[in-house]
Length: 268
Image (cartoon, rainbow, N blue to C red; front, side, top):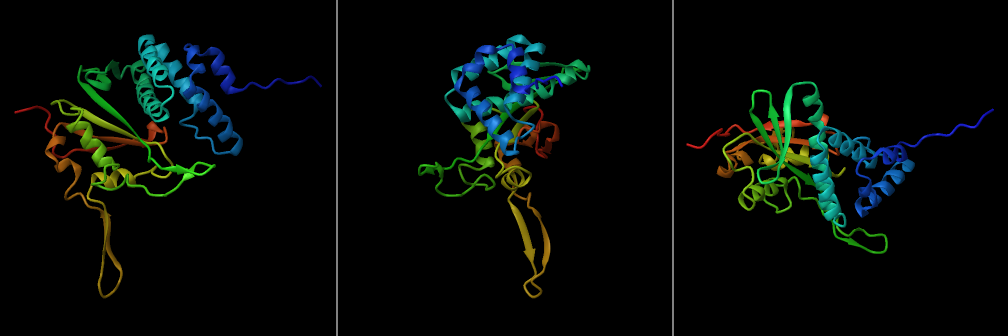
């Protein structure tokens, strides 16, 4: 019986990768190590891993070589900063998701104009969506030889904590003057940690929180849900924010939308 040589998806993609110099960057090396460790442990995230990073960049390169090189430059320059590179990965995921629409003729083009927005999607009628991409990851203080979190505390879902999604969004507007021009602006939030993945962190922080109403005598829950009475959209600085798009752990195809009821499409 003849021997079979099995092919590995990672090595195959590395051989075909158009931006081969990136493979030497510390971020890409760590992503590669994490990929094999997660695959061995049976917990590989199929939406966001080293192989999908290579595939996404390869697809972007095939669509627009200059844009791929722009992402590559940012990865090279910030390769030692894991969190920064994770944020760039989030942008790559979002960008790549719209390429199919261009090929299918439902989107005219995708633009990178950093002075304007992270990603700009142009529709067939010439209108544009301006996307600002956030990569949200809780930050934990590590200690001991195993570098384990010393305190397990997540504030992402709150409204007033500096680490909350709401405050991150408001700082983008007030301090960086993003999402503040009268146009169709969207904040795109990736929840890039299993501890905050899902709806709760975003919905709780952007609303006034998830609240329960319990009967005093019966002790039964009379109502439950997110309270949108004093939401982030009531802040005057969000008037030009068309809405929020959010997704978890690289799965942009399953993204959800929250539209701003107070959105103003133009200044008066």
